[in-house]
Length: 112
Image (cartoon, rainbow, N blue to C red; front, side, top):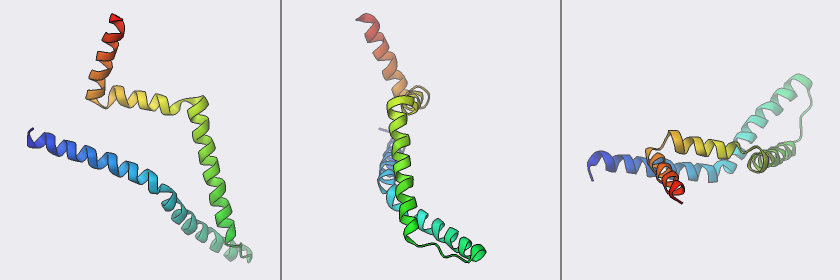
Protein backbone atom coordinates (compact mmCIF):
# COMPACT_ATOMS: atom_id res chain seq x y z
CA UNK A 1 0.00 0.00 0.00
CA UNK A 2 1.37 3.40 -0.87
CA UNK A 3 1.73 6.22 1.62
CA UNK A 4 -1.05 8.31 0.11
CA UNK A 5 -3.52 5.45 0.53
CA UNK A 6 -2.46 4.80 4.13
CA UNK A 7 -2.89 8.45 5.03
CA UNK A 8 -6.32 8.52 3.36
CA UNK A 9 -7.42 5.43 5.30
CA UNK A 10 -6.14 6.85 8.59
CA UNK A 11 -8.00 10.10 7.91
CA UNK A 12 -11.18 8.19 7.02
CA UNK A 13 -10.97 6.14 10.24
CA UNK A 14 -10.26 9.30 12.23
CA UNK A 15 -13.28 11.13 10.79
CA UNK A 16 -15.62 8.14 11.22
CA UNK A 17 -14.59 7.51 14.83
CA UNK A 18 -14.67 11.19 15.77
CA UNK A 19 -18.11 11.47 14.21
CA UNK A 20 -19.41 8.52 16.19
CA UNK A 21 -17.81 9.79 19.38
CA UNK A 22 -19.24 13.24 18.76
CA UNK A 23 -22.74 11.87 18.33
CA UNK A 24 -22.41 9.90 21.56
CA UNK A 25 -21.24 12.92 23.55
CA UNK A 26 -23.65 15.39 21.93
CA UNK A 27 -26.09 15.13 24.84
CA UNK A 28 -23.43 16.25 27.29
CA UNK A 29 -22.39 19.11 25.02
CA UNK A 30 -26.05 19.96 24.53
CA UNK A 31 -26.53 20.32 28.28
CA UNK A 32 -23.54 22.65 28.51
CA UNK A 33 -24.76 24.77 25.60
CA UNK A 34 -28.31 24.85 27.01
CA UNK A 35 -27.00 25.93 30.40
CA UNK A 36 -24.82 28.69 29.00
CA UNK A 37 -27.43 29.96 26.55
CA UNK A 38 -30.18 29.63 29.12
CA UNK A 39 -28.06 31.47 31.66
CA UNK A 40 -27.67 34.40 29.30
CA UNK A 41 -31.40 34.40 28.58
CA UNK A 42 -32.20 34.31 32.30
CA UNK A 43 -29.87 37.26 32.89
CA UNK A 44 -31.44 39.23 30.03
CA UNK A 45 -34.95 38.55 31.33
CA UNK A 46 -33.88 39.65 34.80
CA UNK A 47 -32.26 42.80 33.44
CA UNK A 48 -35.26 43.93 31.40
CA UNK A 49 -38.15 42.70 33.58
CA UNK A 50 -36.65 42.49 37.04
CA UNK A 51 -37.94 38.91 37.39
CA UNK A 52 -35.40 36.18 38.08
CA UNK A 53 -36.49 32.97 36.38
CA UNK A 54 -35.88 29.82 38.44
CA UNK A 55 -32.85 27.82 37.30
CA UNK A 56 -34.86 24.60 37.07
CA UNK A 57 -36.56 26.07 33.98
CA UNK A 58 -33.32 25.25 32.13
CA UNK A 59 -33.72 21.57 32.94
CA UNK A 60 -37.34 21.58 31.79
CA UNK A 61 -36.44 23.37 28.55
CA UNK A 62 -33.60 20.93 27.88
CA UNK A 63 -35.81 17.88 28.45
CA UNK A 64 -38.52 19.31 26.19
CA UNK A 65 -35.89 20.01 23.52
CA UNK A 66 -34.61 16.40 23.67
CA UNK A 67 -38.13 14.99 23.47
CA UNK A 68 -38.81 17.18 20.42
CA UNK A 69 -35.55 16.04 18.79
CA UNK A 70 -36.40 12.41 19.42
CA UNK A 71 -39.90 12.87 18.00
CA UNK A 72 -38.55 14.60 14.88
CA UNK A 73 -36.03 11.77 14.41
CA UNK A 74 -38.73 9.14 14.84
CA UNK A 75 -41.03 10.97 12.44
CA UNK A 76 -38.23 11.19 9.89
CA UNK A 77 -37.33 7.52 10.24
CA UNK A 78 -40.88 6.17 10.11
CA UNK A 79 -42.69 8.56 7.78
CA UNK A 80 -40.56 11.15 6.00
CA UNK A 81 -37.54 9.05 5.05
CA UNK A 82 -35.06 11.91 4.79
CA UNK A 83 -32.38 9.82 6.51
CA UNK A 84 -32.79 7.14 3.83
CA UNK A 85 -32.62 9.64 0.97
CA UNK A 86 -29.56 11.25 2.53
CA UNK A 87 -27.84 7.88 2.94
CA UNK A 88 -28.61 6.85 -0.64
CA UNK A 89 -27.33 10.17 -1.94
CA UNK A 90 -24.08 9.83 0.01
CA UNK A 91 -23.57 6.33 -1.31
CA UNK A 92 -24.17 7.36 -4.90
CA UNK A 93 -22.33 10.66 -5.01
CA UNK A 94 -19.62 10.67 -2.40
CA UNK A 95 -18.02 7.25 -2.12
CA UNK A 96 -16.52 5.69 -5.27
CA UNK A 97 -16.36 2.35 -3.45
CA UNK A 98 -20.09 2.51 -2.81
CA UNK A 99 -20.70 3.37 -6.47
CA UNK A 100 -18.80 0.25 -7.56
CA UNK A 101 -20.67 -1.86 -5.03
CA UNK A 102 -24.03 -0.51 -6.21
CA UNK A 103 -23.16 -1.29 -9.83
CA UNK A 104 -22.15 -4.83 -8.92
CA UNK A 105 -25.39 -5.35 -6.96
CA UNK A 106 -27.42 -4.03 -9.88
CA UNK A 107 -25.65 -6.43 -12.25
CA UNK A 108 -26.29 -9.35 -9.92
CA UNK A 109 -29.98 -8.38 -9.62
CA UNK A 110 -30.29 -8.25 -13.43
CA UNK A 111 -28.83 -11.73 -13.71
CA UNK A 112 -31.27 -13.11 -11.15
